[in-house]
Image (cartoon, rainbow, N blue to C red):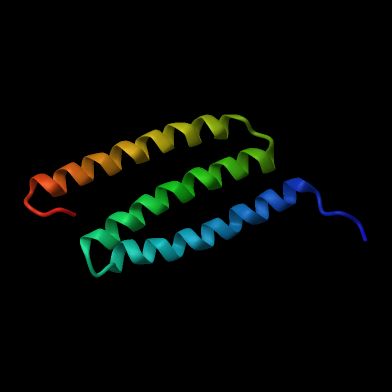
Length: 93
């Protein structure tokens, strides 16, 4: 039995995370409450960072890691901004 190349494992894991991201996108659109939608969007951002990191390892493209880091910072800032907006609007998430 021949071993599976590690790059293929990374790419398969990235594909699995894409499928999970599609499920989270459904929750972000349909979510019954604002909290569900906010959490789903945050998980989508985190999934995107993980997918980019796995693609960087699987395709041997280091610049994907730079994009993943920037996206992670933007995801964090987006979460803080939405939380602040929601609290100032009158509700606590």
